[in-house]
Image 1: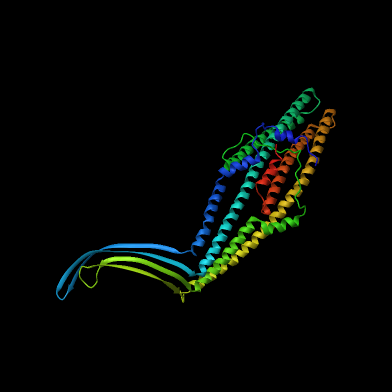
Image 2: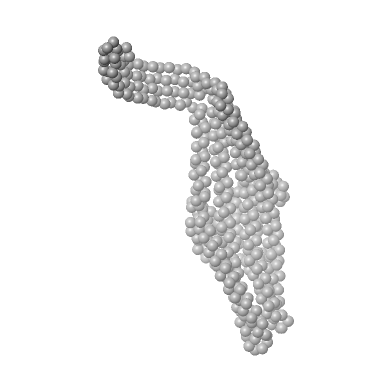
Length: 436
């Protein structure tokens, strides 16, 4: 691919030797970005769904105790007796589910919830990569726009000075001076606007990484941007429909919804538990007198519970869960369609971006030649000042568009990898290798 000689100096003009590169910015964002920190905490919370689901299959053990002060007045046959004493007891109870189908379903749900949390974290990491790269290239674009505006202003200032001199010696009309002055004023306004836009983009980067680097590594246009492999759209679309992280998330949601429906139906099933208890109580004999009695009680057995009718609650929950599963399947289909669309758009973004770069490189060469021709024509009197100004403006617009096209194409590459669910730090490293 042919490269233009002007773009590299323009992009590197304000870059000192120790510029921060894209990979460094990404690693700063991993430590600072609040959205990613939230995702990391949500992952830790989601992983606890596994132990919670397992707990329904494990025994539960409880210890209870009490101590009571008793003050009783007892009347019998005209005789009243006051009895004051302390009684206390404790009991250790064990319950082990033998058959509780809903607990087994909840255990499966817990494992799916962990997988869901991990997929959501992968999506958050991919989103961070895209946000960092977009903010990074937005700053580079704003820098190029400002540099182009400043260079255009300098060129127009030179043309304005020349027009004034030509008017003074009578070789041009005052119209050329007015035209150059008008373009110079417009270039000044564009410079102010570009400077403001650069500050806005730098502040957007600050939100993600907590600071604004003095300079960012810029694109080395001597290194080619590779075309997508495979070089056909269909394999990317097929991969996106299966491996896109949003699709995986909705797949997990659908499976969880299916288990929820199964768990609701299990409300009609009987349950069987192994129960055991051991305890001791102290008090006085209930037959009268003040003799203290200690009782040790131990028991073990099976407890069967057969639900018969619960006011229609279980049936209603089953219908609710079935509707939720239908909704989850619709969301899954929507995610697949969106993933396919994203893959198509991103693939075309890369392919068309590469073609646009090639076309803009040719346009830049033509614009540069046109400017030189118009300058020469103006000197010999076959072109007027407005022709030179238009040629200069066209050249700077082409330079700006070419730099933006490079950045947009790289972003399209990242989005394409994200569409098929494979976007990760090595992809940033590939982009980072193109920076200087």
